[in-house]
Image (cartoon, rainbow, N blue to C red; front, side, top):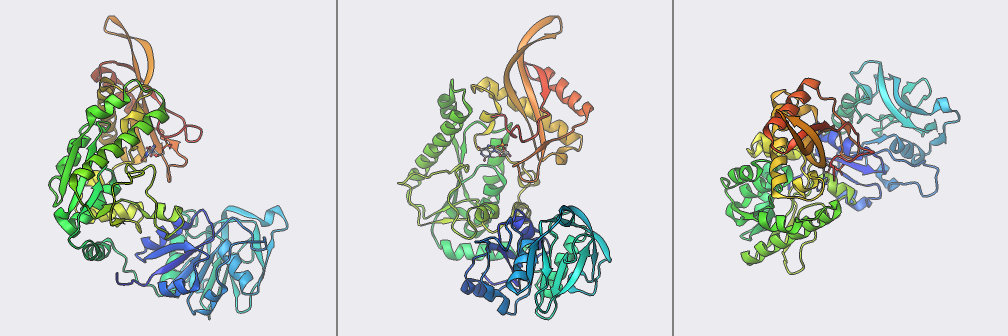
Length: 514
Ligand code: XMP
């Protein structure tokens, strides 16, 4: 691939490392996150327009505190240190970092900050603004060549700068939204200090990827397990553009999808220039799941069965040179940054059988964040509902039915879920939740319908908002919407006589019910 003028982010263990990368890419500047121990030769080969040191949970004076090769300061490349990265730079260049002596000198949260607007970092910004701080150490003595560039009430070194060498440090986090001028500060670094090029676009990525994929694959064949999720869908569309019918997409229909979803996937992909195979494995999965009540057992059965079906299909295809996977950048960073990502266990293709051998694994999305994957999907002409599709668990509706799974319960849940989705869309609230769905409980309760008594099941509605799905809050949906959904479900779905709304956050609950 040709090189863009790119930024190198050295990771010192901070919780916002991915967010920094997303903020940089938002400004159309390509960047990658690598461990802070990246060898100097690799840094040179990367040829960055600038380097950003992330924050981290350590103190620079702790034994074994993370460090970069100090030779990075001799390359003539601009550096921005954020929080720990700022302290590390100050200490490495001969300054002094010390723990804040009093509680009031430690800063957490939104902090009024005064900027020195003659500094490149704050050029064109107001003199006062709110920044977001989270630090217990501070820079007690500046390294030679540096000046203070911003201050808060508790901290004279809210930012430091050496304009000659183009080294900058901020004690606060410009990448979080609470820092009001965060994006402008990063833009000043990217375009003012690093003179990076804003040439990172999905059109460009698409063109270069297609070229590179064609070159690599040659006349070989590629196999992709299509789940209908955003990542595998975009992966399929990209590969289809690159190698057309050399791409074989296998969609294992396990019968645990939402209403009409299997047909929708078939409708979209069977029209593309690729070889689409829909395997109807519905009976097979239902049989295996029959009478199984425990969540973990269900997940295991579904995972294993999936591999079996996929394996049978692969064998029937004869020699296939490549296996493609929709691995995305957060998986790569989390698995150690830059190292070959292992096949994700929660991916549908977890643990491929030994006898299915491929010449290589293709991961064409491995450098993209989720929002970039969506944007690439749009560029490739995928329909909007597929590109914005919510996350959907691999084991599908089986983990949204408490207890045993039957065809009848699946049909009830599909209808109830479709009602909820329709009403969310109609009320314009679909965007208010990161994920929402109906689940079927095993709770039977007494009801009265017309003149007769019922003893039927309860449906639970769940809607959550979240940034990362590690924690999530339940969404305060309007009562009149809940009312409409409830009365429609009870009227339209036989066997359901009660609708509950889940008002538990994660933790202590999880997003899915099983
Ligand atoms: P939980 O229930 O763990 O869900 O709070 C967090 C997010 O992960 C999704 N999820 C899964 N995704 N395979 C997947 O690919 C799975 O087995 C699985 N279980 C949960 C869930 O939908 C939510 O977005």
